Length: 344
Image (cartoon, rainbow, N blue to C red; front, side, top):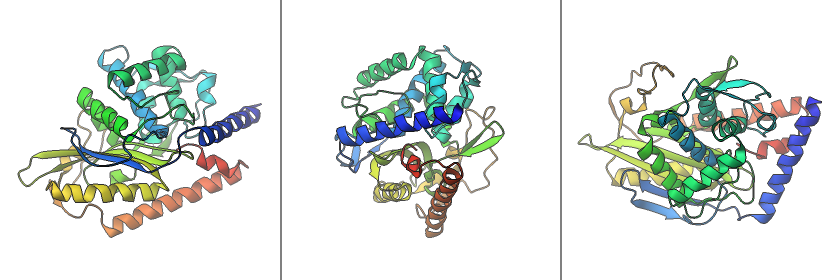
């Protein structure tokens, strides 16, 4: 019976992908680079063109979760029960089973690090009672933040032709997360977490290759291409902090997307004289008791190229190795390789 449920989820997932590609906005490259603190736009292309946000959607889901935490409506140790709907979500997912209880801490880790669609549904149902109720809150908050070209239809970003956003709107959401919940911003730097004794690693390789990266969120569906929202913290020669954000839609691959972001950041960081990186900014000081990290032995200030050739080579190998692992995994399970293009 479980195989039937799995193939049923696959069928509806592929159907949604086909519908999104046939009836929604065309896939395009769009980006916006801005000063995170002032909001000043430094570079843009198609910044108000509607695109599919894919898993960037989870940033709004996290915004509402952080709001509930800040208002003490829930706690990190609060547990939510996984529903049948959550267990039927397409990948990327944790693999929850109906009736399973998960803490808010685990679900937030799963959203940020693994981009788990089933975790997004568990949080939505736990906070608002149902996915439709939660989506209503997402859209209300989007309107309040003046994300004028954004419509949410689900809390995860799985394909839906009616779920759209823009680079400008995602930049607005990024600034709102930093402004309204600065104490939680460190969570976006998480590189891994453990669930059922298995370690899951981040999809955001810029955390390892772009000095000063604060993380944020990656996203992919076939109709959108490879998307990312990332922020960078640097310091000038006077040790004054400078923070920048980049929203990028429509990469042809994860590697191409990351290189495009680096190419967008590099001239701006040089022009703004923000070439120093404070290693302390990469530590999870607010949540050390929840996510203990090893002390970093790097020097306090590092002046170096944004991304060395050796780092780029390692990044490319990581993507290649990950792709090979996925292909072997799907082949072993006799599942269509088309699944690899559903959601990421």
